[in-house]
Amino acid sequence: MRQGEGTSLAVSIAAVLSLSRKTGKRLSMLDRRTLLAAAGASLAAPALARLAAPVSFVDYPFQLGVAAGDPDHQGFVIWTRLAPRPGDPDRGLGGRPAEVRYEVSESPDFAQLVAEGETIARPELGHSVHVTLTTLRPDRVYHYRFIAGGERSVAGRARTLPAPGTEVASVRLGVAGCQDYQSGLYTAYRHLAAEDCHAIFHYGDYIYESGPRAAIFSWGLGQMVPTVRRHAGPELFSLDDYRRRYTEVRLDLDLQEAHRSTAFLSSYDDHEVVNNWVSDIAPGDVPTDHFLLRRAAAMQAWYEFMPVRTEAFPRNGMSGPWRRFRFGRLLDARLLNTRAFRTDQPCGDRFGSLCPEIRDPRAEVIGRAQEDWLVSGLGETRWSALLQQVMMMNLERGRPPEPRGINPDSWAGYLVPRDRLLGRLARVPNLVVLTGDEHQHWAGEVRRSDARPESPAQAIEFVTTSISSGSDGPGVRAEHQEILARNPGLAYIRDERGYSVMTITPDAWTAEMKVVDTVRSPGGRLSTAATFRVPSGQSLLERA
Image (cartoon, rainbow, N blue to C red; front, side, top):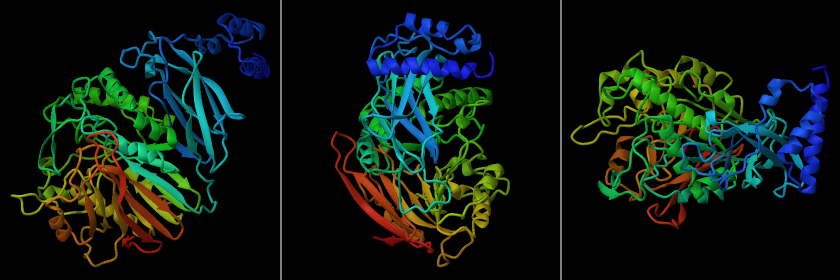
């Protein structure tokens, strides 16, 4: 093909397609073939191979909704997954690739498009679609949608980040995760969708790997409680297993509404693979090679269903790099990966235990390469935030009959890398840590393990409760008072389901701990359980 012919061909095709949209007439397959032939035989065969024939769907193909994620100041990823028959292994598509059109506009009526194009939903990735938009304007709300087979998706909404170096008056960041499908309804997501957040940090446990259960143990109530709904399939091992579970979860309309409302900053924790996994260490007596096959299947499914960039594409059985989200000169948020590079949990991973291995000098949580990346340039904005999965506060969590103990699946089980990282971050002002995993709201101060309790805190940590995991909680547990007394830097605990909203301004970081009164039946009512304020220049928790 001579220089310029490809561009001319693209313009010709775009013009005809644009005319088709304006007149409301769809091109038939014959029309498309005629168009390509008329454009000239100079179109290369490999380019032809990339095109997929229009598909006539047996049912509505966008039943899993739409999503956006990984924003920067020039764009974000938009996602959908074709599934006219969500429960079928081939999703009702017969293993064929399908052409999908996307449209992006600054107005919800899509009167004028600012980006548009076509892509292919391929069976190798379960007919998922990831489109990275790169030509949008900074700090602006956009609307997007997909079209395939004459059907149109609902419209999603996402916002680009402010340009680097610009002054930003305010950022609202939602925090959510731990959404065990069997433990409760996703009511909190419906409320979170109405919060008008710039983005939502999902800290992980998007799915749970277990099979159907009639009941679960509630740590808050100290007893077994019936599950609210049950998984449709057994425990997850294969790619098909993981795909079915994500499909089951994504059919939830409250979750779809949250995804539709804003861009997600998506992470994974442990249950996306199997409980408390780390690195390439097989749980129990499972052969390592067998575990790696399971992890590879889980990583592919996670990528297929998350609105993430191609950097997260699974390679060598792993997915999910660390990422940075910078909101002008106001906030530098670093999303960490605390599973893939971690050494094995100490103390046999027994919750509430204590052992010498928590001071193992060879231990790692995020690994040296990620640690070097994290400390590089952090502190150049007014606020810095670590977006991660497991608690960083070094809390005494012993349960009878143990007089003392920690959670070995948190940073408290890895004191050497924890203290080393805090030492390297010692000069970073206005540092906030956002965490999940605990199924409760927590708020407290972060210090090195050898620091005196009365010394200034190095960071403030907000741990966000679960969307549904743990089912309804009592609010205050019997052991809360004792935990607060044992840990002077800890200010707050509450056991209810919900999410958090962080409002960041140059003067203060404000955290609202939101809860719903039930996830066991529809219509859970939202309330704000607690609000904390961290003034700029002070690692100090103020109850608002």
